Length: 192
Image 1 (cartoon, rainbow, N blue to C red):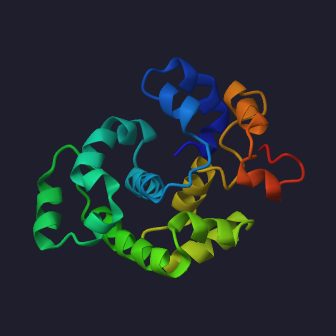
Image 2 (cartoon, rainbow, N blue to C red; image 1 turned 180 degrees about the horizontal axis):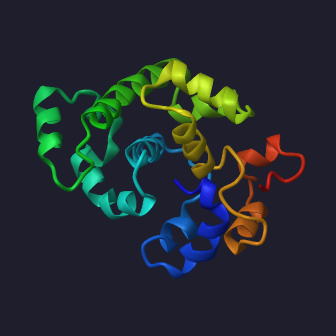
């Protein structure tokens, strides 16, 4: 998504009507709601190989297609749902990404039964270095390579790098209580 371009993202997103709301209100902000975490994971999976702007433009359609990212509902999707999704021009019609959304919903249900919530599962493993996070995600989920995992965790406040040091939104996140989780693992403040 934007980590490679974090400096540029913080420079141009605030003035861009598509990117500003995400940059200013969501990017790097800790999330504890499992539905929101699932949405963000699926957005990151869908972004692989594409632009973040495209995903933001398709966000409403993704929410509609995937039952507002209700984990239990998506976990029950079957062959008819897959066929419906492959015909939905409003979303990314990639068979592997669609299958990943459904399978990862099922895996999150298992995590919820075992750990209480997806949010608890993430928090219990923190802090980890990105490489270790990737290994953990690859054991639990599908379609979760290094870039997807890194961007997902950065976007939910578990890895540093969402904002550059002089970004007003990044500064606001530093004043937040409780502090973003990535600060616990970054004695230097975590800025990249």
